[in-house]
Image 1 (cartoon, rainbow, N blue to C red):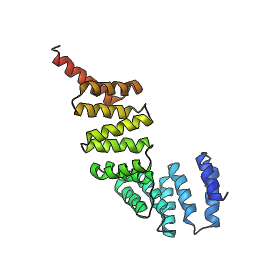
Image 2 (cartoon, one colour):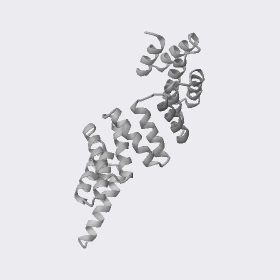
Image 3 (cartoon, rainbow, N blue to C red):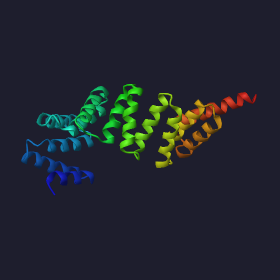
Image 4 (cartoon, helix red, strand yellow):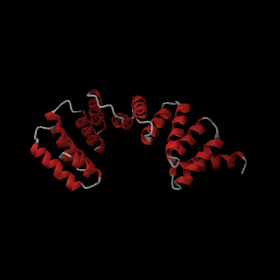
Length: 223
């Protein structure tokens, strides 16, 4: 096993110091190979050393401006710094360079969502779910994006898909509740708010929604 692969293995096992030594050795032995810098950048990103990670990804790009994974890593650095516009640019560049993975499409969608561009985010979340249909994070975000753009039926189908993967996803239940309120089906809405609260009793939004419905019911019953 070469040093980079061994370092990745240690990183997955959370043996960060051993991984760092192997990545460093690899860079010293192959200073013009961008992969060493990308892997070290990923490690630094993982332990939240954002400034150092940025330098390693920029060095990788300097060595190979076609390295999609370096742009993806740099995008993650900017995303963690809440620089969503810069993050989006890097993720888009990674896609243009042929990085066709669910995560990069998810991250473009999340960047656009944070910039309040729901309609623009939607196709990226959709593509992420096509590439990885079992990714509950991408599915949930896709559902939110559909709901935000008033595609309520599709949003509901997507939240139900999330619950198939993770039956204890309280936010999926909460958003199903909201979608049923939108359709004026108060009983089904209440059912999902209760399920959200069964899973997560301190779910503030579900608590608030349930209290509102109970308050309206009391008024309509003349209490």
